[in-house]
Amino acid sequence: MTTSLPSALVEKIRQSVNPQRLVDTAVALIEIPSPTRSAGDVANKLAEILTQDGFTVERPVADWPEAPAVVVRFDTGKPGRILQFDGHLDTVHLTFVPPRVENETLYGSGASDMKGGIAAFVEALRVLRDTDSLPGGSVLLTAHDHHEGPWGDRRQVHAFIREGYTGNAVLLPEYLADRLPMAGRGMMIFEVRITREGEPVHEVLRPANLPDVVKIGAELVTRLHKLHDQIKSNSAPFAGHDSVFVGSIQAGEIYNQAATLCTIKGTRRWVTPGSAADVRAEFEELLNQLARETGAQIAVDFELQGEAFHVEPGNAIVGAFQTAYTAVTGAELPMGNKPFVDDGNTYCGIAGIPSLTHGPAATGAHTLYEAAPIAELVRVAQVYALTAIGYCAG
Image (cartoon, rainbow, N blue to C red; front, side):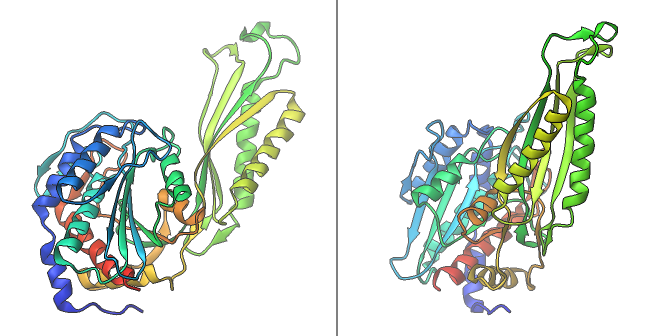
C-alpha cells in the first residue's frame, strides 16, 4: 500500500522538469562515442555539465584510470536516507549512431541504454536542488564505465561498493518500464575449450583413438541440455528458474579436417542469491567428468555478470517508488521480474543494497536503432525526483 504526496508538491516537481534541458544533456552525452572501456571522454563531459550546473563533482578512479567515475553528492544536511542514482556511460560495441531528435523521440547510441536515463537522473537532481524539495537525507549520483559484457567486468561498481560510494538504496535507469523488478537471476557467461594434442589432420589420415573434439563438444552440449532440464525446477517468485543455454559451438577450419579445438559458449543463470560459487563448482565437475571419460583436455572461463537478488516488497524504497510512480501516472507499477542482468544485481545480490531498475519505455537497446520518447524521459525524471523526496526523508 502506498501513501500519497501533496498534490501541490507533485505538480511543482512535474512542472520543474525542463524537457529541453533534459534532451540537451542527453544529446551532449550521446554525441560522444563511448564503447565499453572507452568511456573517459563522455565521463569528462558529464562531469563538465554537472560542474557548470553548480554541483561539486568527484572523480574516483574506481579501478579504471582510463575513465574515472563521476560522483555528485546532493546533501540536505538533515537526517535521512541516501538514495543512489547509478548509471553506466558505456555502450555496446556497435557502429556509432550520432544523436538526433525527430517526432518527439531521441535517437542515437545510448539513447535507450542508458544515456537518456542518466540525463533524466541529472534533471531530477537539478529539480530537487532548484525547488528545495528534498526534506532530508541526500542523493548520490554515480556514473561509470565497464558495464557492458563481455567487454566490461563491472569493476567500477565493485569499486564503488568497496570504497563506500553507495546509498541505502539504488535506482538504475535501464530501459524497463512495464514492471517493477523485485527479483532477478544471476548470470555467468561460460566459454569451454575442448582440445587434443597434435596438429589438425585430414579425416582419412587421423590415427586410431584420436580424441574427436567435435564429438566431445556435441556430448557436452547434450549434457548441458540435460543439466538445464534438471535445474529448471529451481525457481523463485518473480525471478523464474535456473537455466543453462548454449548459443555458440565452433570447431575446425574445413569440413573434412579433424580439428584440435572445439569452443562452446553460453550462459548459466540461477535464482538463489549467493549461489555463484556453487554454480561454478557444479559446472566444473560436469566438465571434469567428461574429460576423464574422453581423455580430452577441457578448460573453461567464466565471466560473472551479476548475482541473483530479490528485494522485499515492504522495503522503504519500494513504497517510495510506488508513491512517486502513482503520483505521476495514476496507478502503481505491477511487480515482476528483471529479465536481464544489470548493475542492480551487483548492488543488491552482492552488497545487499536494495536496488530498483526503472527507466524510460525506450527501444532498440543493443542495436543500431536506439530510441527514447522524450515524454518518457520527462516522466522518469519526475518519478526519480519524487522517489527521492519520499525515500530520503525516512
